[in-house]
Length: 292
Ligand code: ATR
Image (cartoon, rainbow, N blue to C red; front, side, top):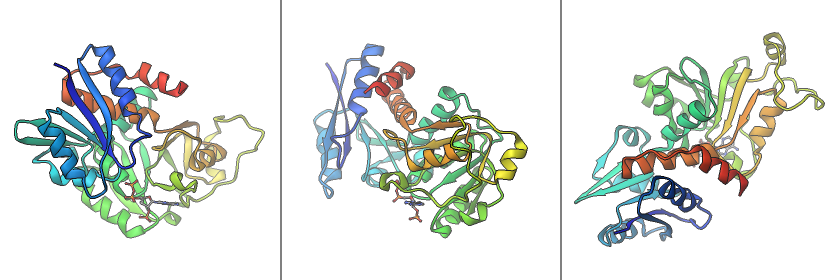
C-alpha cells in the first residue's frame, strides 16, 4: 500500500516540497505519495489529526505553523526542543514525534554541497526569529563560532544566552559589527521577503568593473572595512531570486554567494530519512530545481 505524506502551511500552493519528495521517492524506489495541504490559520491541529486518522505517516510543517507543530508533538528531538519549532512530524501509534530538520539542512548544504567546513569559522548569523532559532544548534554542533546580530538587539542577546551552553555564541547589534569580519554571513532574517537588507556596516565598495566573486588580499579587505573576510561565504536562506543581501555581499567582495535552495532540498532529505530510514541523493534534485 502506498504510504501517504504531506506538507501543511498557509499559504502552501507555492511549495516545492511535493516535487522534491516525488523525486526522492522515485530515486529510492519508495512507494509513497506526498501532497501539499492548506490548513486554515485556526485549523492546524484539526488538519493534522484528521490526516493522521486517515493513515498519513508523516507531515512537513511550514509557515506559520512550526510553533503549533512543536506544541502538538508528544515527543521532541533535541534539535526541535532547541529550535522551539517543528518542521517534521512522524506518526508512530499514538505518539506524534516532532523534529526540526532546517538546521541540519543548512549545515549539509554549506558543508557538503558548498564544501565550506564550519569548524572554527567565524559565522555571522543575522536575525533572531524562528529561522535563526532553527539553525543555531546545528551550526554550533558543526563547530561554528557564532555572532548573532538582530535589529531588535535584545532578541540577539536572548538567543545567544539560550544556546551558549552548546558552544561559542554571542549577541550583537548591527552597528557593533563595525570592524569585525566573518568567514560566513548567513541571512536568517525575513528582510529578503520585503526586498530589503539588514543594516550591516558597509565597507568601501568594490569597483563595479571587477568580476563577481573576485577575491581580494587580506589588506584590501581590512582597508575596505566590510564584514566579509577574504574567501567569505554569503548565504541567504531565501531562494528563488537574487536578494538585496546577496547583491550587497557581492558588491562588498564576498568570495562566494549561495541562496537557500540547497537548504530546502537538504532539510527535505533529512525529513525523508526520518520517515523512511533511507538517504536520497540530493545533488540531482537541487540541479533539477535550479532549472525550473
Ligand atoms: P522567521 O520565522 O522568518 O525568522 P520572524 O520570527 O518573524 O520570522 O523573525 C524575523 C526576523 O527577521 C527578526 O529577527 C527580524 O528582526 P526584528 O526582531 O528586529 O524584527 C528580522 N528582520 C525582518 N526584516 C528585517 C530587516 N529589514 N532588517 C533586519 N532584520 C530584519
